[in-house]
Length: 272
Image 1 (tube, one colour):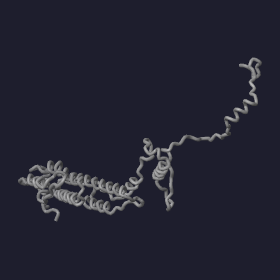
Image 2 (tube, rainbow, N blue to C red):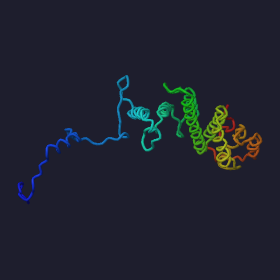
Image 3 (spheres, helix red, strand yellow):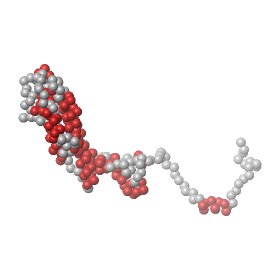
Image 4 (tube, rainbow, N blue to C red):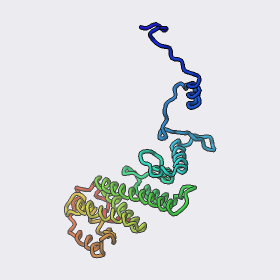
């Protein structure tokens, strides 16, 4: 180790002209280190807002609003992929929040007809969220409402299958009542998708499972034929198809009272 002042190491002295040249070309700024500072990325920003009543609002909504403002001030980033900027539709979020307040309807409903009708009424009366205007928002809103109804119709088909599986006359009557309600709803709303769901259910579930003469649930098919619950015209289904669907089911009734829990009820006097 060489001593600090070693005669073998020449001392370097900068001339005044060299020092002047350095200080004029490189400005030295005194900084103070900040303890605990770390990098923060835009996608990590989460802010809390407080509503007028003092309650805490959704932090995500605030973040999305910041993202929208950031994007507006930086148009060159409009096509940016890989973060939340430009990828969140706040209008859709508000619509989803509105739809979340609708009545629930599940396959385990004790009163499926009442619950189904309550949901349809609520969807029909649901207003567009405040502040959302224009044809684009209205179109999105209507699409979301239709999705809710389609899901409710699918749930109702599951309710019907479950109800028939209980194998009692009371449950058979309820299943037929639900089936009639489904058909009336699909025709009244006139959504092609609802008609398709209903027709598919009749052709792929109801007839194959309940239409076998002498089968366990044949009484359901017989009641369906008597009530003239057939396919809905449209989506490739003609009037001839509607008529043929019921005619093919007109087979001789085989009485099997052992398949029914309550023999005193008249199964075929339904929907009075």
